[in-house]
Amino acid sequence: MVGIVIVSHSCKVAEGIYDLVMQMASENDHIFPAGGLEDGSIGTDAFKIREAIEKADTGDGVAVLADLGSGIMSAEMAIEMLEDDISVRIADAPVLEGAVSAAVTSTSGASLDEVIEAAEEARTASKLS
Amino acid sequence: MSSKIYDCIEKIGNCIIGNKEFLTELDREIGDADHGINMARGFTEVLAVLPKDSDNISEVLKKTGMTLLSKVGGASGPLYGTAYMQAAKACAGKTALAPEDGKAIFEAVIAGIQKRGKAVRGEKTMLDAIIPASEAYSAAIDGGSSIGEALDAMCKAAEEGVEYTKTIIATKGRASYLGERSIGHQDPGATSATYTMQMIRDFIKG
Ligand SMILES: Nc1ncnc2c1ncn2[C@@H]1O[C@H](COP(=O)(O)OP(=O)(O)OP(=O)(O)O)[C@@H](O)[C@H]1O
Ligand SMILES: [Mg+2]
Image (cartoon, rainbow over all chains, first blue to last red; front, side, top):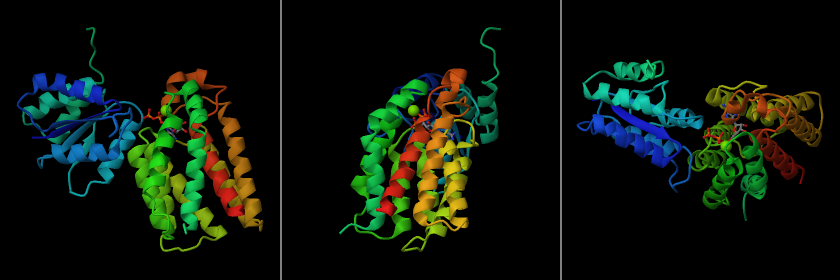
């Protein structure tokens, strides 16, 4: 099953999204939040993200959903620092909606590319029509 | 006794930590009011973990970069982290640095920051201080100036770069959310980068 890592500047946001996602993907235990810094401050931490990616991987790869600004940069650094050979992709998608789509798709047994595609569709989905 | 490279990083760190409030104020105007806090947190840890007596320039720079990467938290974490790690690569195997090495370090640092942040000159970022500073330094060295003159030219260009950031719209980073309202404010990252270069100059000139 494709793993999912939820990156946010805020530990509460990452865990909150995780809670929402798990309502729809309760049987998926390869989803991990990676929010905030070690001391609880707001920010993103490449090492924390790397650890989450390593935990999330089962061999099928990991999709990363990230929020603003340095979320992406820290995720990219985390990927470059991986010691194991894990296929990881960052979704170009809003973190909450993208994480929900990714989780549901991953739970259905889809591939990493399909999970990323599902997450990225969340970017263009209209909420009002 | 502490090594020269440690002393230099310590000087940079103390300057950044000393300007924590000001850097945060700048970021309050056009960002999320944390640049000084982020950088001070990073350098406080750097000063705590760096080996004082190691004169392995590359190793000390790498450790500085890794520590900033893990502790800074904002965009400046991966960016300065990458900058110091690229500088470390450019210094690999060296126990002393010559004026020419400064050019290679600048090149590596700028390439690293651009790869990481995908910004170019003119987007109101730290690059608007670093790129002109690099050009001024290299031109001075190539033109036969002394290292002191080259470092002065570097800092002057960086300071002008910070002034220039007041006149442009941010198109990268948090400040880009403000669009035109970012005009009139100097970029926090360009400011901390300029402090860094000023401290390097002061350190080398003694
Ligand atoms: N893509 C980029 N390329 C180069 N420099 C950048 C980029 N994004 C931000 N910066 C620099 O980083 C500085 C802001 O650093 P700071 O520590 O406040 O991070 P931040 O913007 O709050 O991070 P985050 O993205 O996590 O919110 C800016 O003033 C700018 O100089
Ligand atoms: Mg900030």
